[in-house]
Amino acid sequence: MEVSRLGMVVHGGRTEAKDAACVVRAWCEEHGVRCTDIDVWHDGGRRSAGEEVAAAGDPDLIVTLGGDGTFLRGARLAAENDALVLGVDVGRVGFLTEVPVAGVRAALDSVREDRLRIDSRMLLALRASRRLEVPTGMEAWVRFGRGPLLPPPQVRPDCTVDSEWGIPLDVTALNDVVLEKLARDRQVSVGVYVSGRLLASYSADALLVATPTGSTAYSFAAGGPVVSPRAEALVFTPVAPHMAFNRSVVTAPDEPVGLRVLERSGPAAVSIDGQLRGVLDPGDWIGVYAAPRRLRAVRLEPMDFYGRLRERMNLTDAPAAVADGSPAPLWSMTSPPPGDLDHLALLTRTGGTAPLL
Image 1 (tube, rainbow, N blue to C red):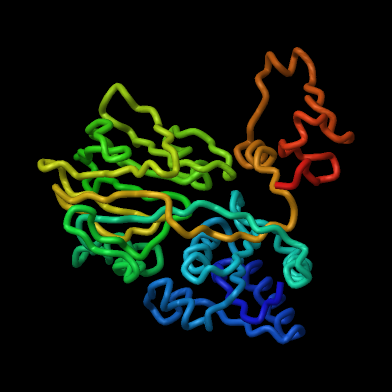
Image 2 (cartoon, rainbow, N blue to C red; image 1 turned 60 degrees about the vertical axis):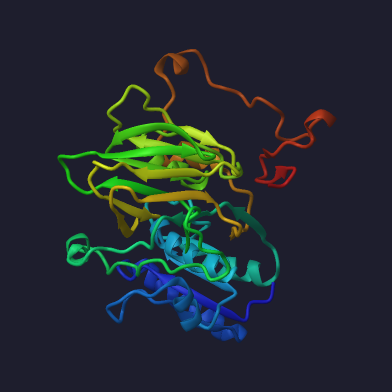
């Protein structure tokens, strides 16, 4: 693809990320590509995604240099501008990033020469009973040890505002939307709706709705299922619920999840991809659904999600199973699959797939 404008999101606290940024700038200068650092609060504040990508010259490729948190920041901007996003791994977990820091120049060459695949990922969108705001004084409290907060989401101008269907917020989530308690000694009470029908009323530390991409993040830590990033679903997971039913619920992508704070509950914070974006009072609600737009992430090779899962989560084999032998490959990884299996995605020994992911 032709890259004419490149935006960088750099984790300024890591030397490797800053060194890699120099490599990206040099590559851009060699190929006549405009390169702009996207705001990382050097000016002491944060801007909306639209303002940040406009200030960066509407890049058609966004490169993130950091860990998964940095990638999430870049994904927020890429989704706003329908740009491609390439994640360079300078982190510790690396479920979202694509290439190691040593391979950044080769990765940019591959993108420029169109030797890439586009990984389309589901995003979450929001409607709410009212606009989200952070109460005065709360920002200083939650900002301790972190950067400044993102501004409250604006209203989407291309959608109608309706007294019954709520306000469409101009915000997307790649990982999850979380509704959580503010006081340690009091859980939040929330009515949870799926496809408009009440599922149950929960009293819990938090309730979250995740994408398949986000299933290995907070949802996983809360006991939720691991979902293939290629799947299409919403994952609802309660966190420390005070009730017998504590399981996740996986819904279809056209089945929205609604969360209404009950009348005598305490207030609840709304976090989007780990960023506090507002506080709801009793009686307020949010509706979480699959966004009409999707994230377009660069893939240079087929993603071995399950191999990465085994590595990143330090999965170990059961001692009894180890004593009973070593597992051989289930299917041949060298010969073509038979006709009834040739539509499946199987990683080969050479790193390809049959067929390609």
